[in-house]
Length: 304
Image (spheres, helix red, strand yellow):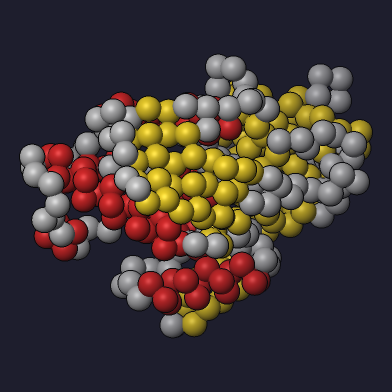
């Protein structure tokens, strides 16, 4: 059963790789370098330096009584902080749960707050927050050369490495993952606001581009809700389940279905003749959502 949980890891790759978006404006980051920063969450904040507190307003994108409800500023949470201007170290206290950041910028709090401890061995991936004048974005800072491999093998995506090992013939290259020899996903390009991946299975191939959504933006909230309605599922609407606008969603759906069929054929020693419906209506796309959620769960405050 555990092996089955990772059967769609390759199909979910475009999500876990975390589409990057434009970060805070250079003027908002107060001259601090935001190169490689890929935000996945945005919110408004207020700081009171005399009291040493920061208040965050988390956006609301939810369904209530069958209708979509969106608020840019929802529930407010206030936390205390300490900033040492000599060392650039920030300690934030979330009701006794403390997080430590390394600050870079010229006008506190504007700039980059990089997690002081959470990063992979090579230091290519780390969680971070970028503060502007009134908004803050949370995400990751990437500084490596093998985007796909670094993300997957970091502390953020590493939980799926075991799944790759369990899949027969699974191999991960710098920007390409191959499963069962005939199935592969390759990162074609990634930029500030889009990632494009190529899916190959047998003689078939297609590409799909993904652009991230933010609950902070009303348009993104509505787009996610529209996708939820089109899916026609009974599950509760969760914005994090629809975090990307895709150019060709059928591409990943077909790839996932083909991979699932091949995998089940391998398990039962047969080829073809297996219908996903025979597996109790199993929906492999749920794993794509699960991996996507691991990235979009970077909330403000980003509690560990």
